[in-house]
Length: 484
Image 1 (cartoon, rainbow, N blue to C red):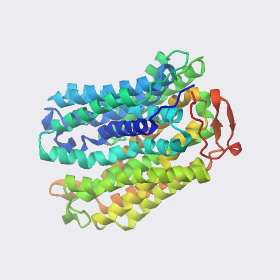
Image 2: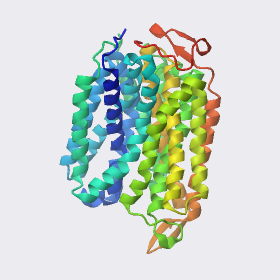
Image 3: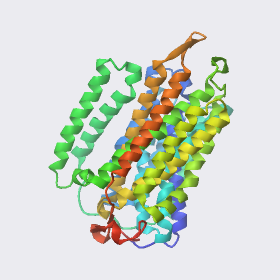
Image 4: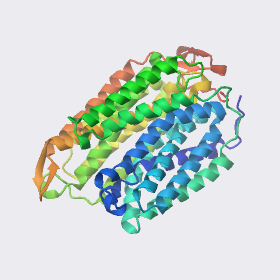
């Protein structure tokens, strides 16, 4: 059993800062993405891997980091994740060519394990009156960090050498590493067992192949054998991996627990809501930056577009305590449904309000409020449905499903935006109808997420030692401090 820390507020603040720092890396290179081929002396196709490799590493590492945390202790994995972020950022800062940049970006992606492990750890040391809001806030950092990363990195890149982006990230990560060591409680919450290394390798190969095929589909072409070959290989490997995991006494991911309806439906909802979150992050900045001569573009600079998007990121953080209150009052399931519906409404607002930057700001804030509410509810549903000894691994799988949703969104939005174009100065740019279809699809994804959330059965709460009791026997946000 874990002993409560004397300074839970400080520890929670450090974990949330760490989550923000890790999430920042997901979007920090987007403002300089078009310049990467020249900056790294490589082709545009090769330079696109600077973004892709971080997303792939993050998707793979979330369940693996969660399982390792369940075995060796969560504080140790948090510290190691922060250290990886520091090293990876420093390597990127020192890079002038593609290979070291990819190595550094991969390490930054591996640091994303900090978020699911931090979410599950909060339940162990935070007092009951703080745990609900803390979990909600920590979960929201996944969206907040990505949103504020755009204007922050655009401002840094616009004001000096692009390497400064990564030096700032390295300095922030170094501070997080030190704070994680000194302010986050060192507790003995590991369990006996072993790491399923073959399972980790199989998951990495299957996920990477599938997500590469999906993310590169718009570049390679959806009629390309390479695209579908990568996707098919990923599916085959993942099916074989699943069969292998079911035969293991100590699997990397307990698929039987994952297949239980509360966990399964929550994870499916995570795909839909992750899709909805990413869609606006891709579409709105492009519409803001589209030249005014098109008749529908808003002519904003990269920095201005990032600043118009920044309040949406803060909205996610603002709504974290709102989500916590909803979870206490009506339960995590209904809170997730509300979040998904609000997210969908944000897209519908954008569909009818896209004529001025302030209108897209309003739409983005509505959508982001939904993300903040929904993202906070998902880990609560997961933690309430699995044994304490599997908490970090289960939250990691949920994070993986969110990442799968964001990857699918990037592929679908790119396809929609290139499916209907108009010539402009020798280039083809998306038409107004293409942007509207993106908003429609984003809304549909969010409403599908709400429908899936409605199908989540009554959540069962994790008790001491992993025993579970019916949700109806406790208040919706009852938290037992000292699980593990």
